[in-house]
Amino acid sequence: MHRLKMPLKFPFTNSITTIKKKDIIITELHDKDGFIGYGESVAFDAPWYTEETTHTVEYIIEHHLWPLIKAQQISHPAELKINNIRRNHMAKTAIEGAVWDLFAKRKQQPLYQAIGGTTNKIPVGAAIGLQSSDQQLIEKIEQALQQGYKRIKLKIKPENDLHTLEKVRSHFPTTPMMIDANSAYTINDIEHLKRMDQYHLMMIEQPLASDDFTDHAKLQQQLKTPICLDESIHTLADVQTAIALQSCKIISIKLAKVGGFTNAIQIHDYCQQHNIPVWCGGMLEAGVGRAQSLALATLPNFTLPADPGASNRYWHQDIITPEVEVNNGYVTLPQQPGIGYQVKLPSTDQKVLT
Image (spheres, rainbow, N blue to C red):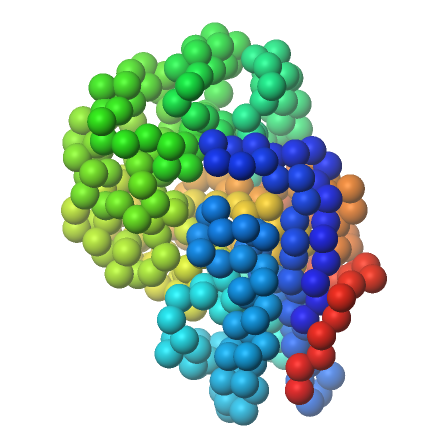
């Protein structure tokens, strides 16, 4: 395990917190034949998004996941037995992602092909945090559109949401746009939220509580704008509940939040069977997590632009070469085996597990 702190180019602010640097764990998994697979924990250093933090991920990997898996004999990553450890999905993803990367390299396949992806070209959108002024927000959107991003995601909070949408829509009347509330509202705000229909948004992401399905279902009945669930979705059972209750019309699948590729593929397939489009959300990933999230987004039901875009939108220098680039609104994944990028770790706190 490598642990490093990466300062963001610009602070990223949502309705809950402001992030200035990311505390990251990279897992490096070696096999007897000299192949190396990499994974990443995208947990934050405080439990504001989920209950996991970088500290808990490190502990769970060292004391529970690694002792559990190091003696396992498997021929495919889907055979990895880690589900008797409850939740801790970001810790599991950091391990499982390295296993998938290693598997793809042994098979001499790009990771996206190994998981069943159909293309290496992914449309991406730009996520823009809360800004200190309307003008600054307009400039950030203009920059993203000039760089070719296919849609804009705005972080919002109740104090100024309608004002923000009015300003943005007056400048960008036809730009594909969505908003992310990070659970900033309650069902008592239903009349307020209904006013957002006039702005012709692609979706409202997670307006209500992070563990809620029933109130989202009541809200979706009243809204023309599709609700997208994000924080509520951790497992296939969550997806089945959301679809059964009609809590949303779109689902965001974040690789780390659902425990890795095997679970994410199951969720993707179930949504596809039930005509629920999915898209790949972002977690301020460094290069390994970014490459793996984009590989996930090559599955066929990922029909909406993904969040993880160019490395240089977030980092002064990423930990992969070449860095992830966006051209005309698309990321084209390399055809080399595994994640397809060379991992170049800076000086880190390293812990070797045997």
